[in-house]
Image (cartoon, rainbow, N blue to C red; front, side):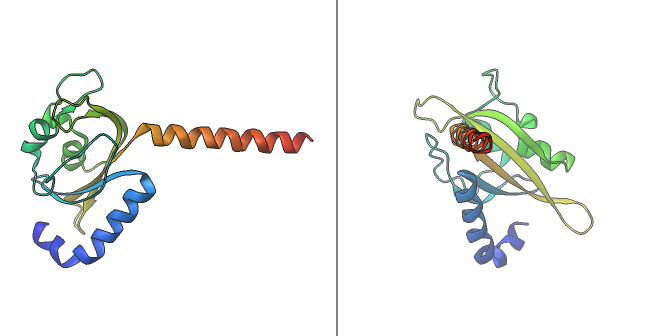
Length: 156
């Protein structure tokens, strides 16, 4: 997939940036089976992943400080990207703790990983997203307010 990504980068880059902006987080394109990061767009407040492009699955845990919800250091096979690559099934709605080093506390993020398959069904890549939960909490609060206003106007 790394060779296939180059001709399409003019199309893929704006698409990933649009997805990241709409999501309010980061969107990362990984090659399979290496997990190499081919493109990254957006970001999550508190996480500054410098030079993420080119990192492979072997680099993730040590380079990006990935922790499970219980605070333990993540095992590579447990990472949503690796699981989506291995199983060919999406991994959605998980919460992970990510850190960017430098002594900063890890940040909780919602993580989704979606496998990309070729015509034969083989996994050729994964699109992974990381979203700041505070963004979704704000959206949920706005939704509750809208529903409350609607309900009041219906009763009146």
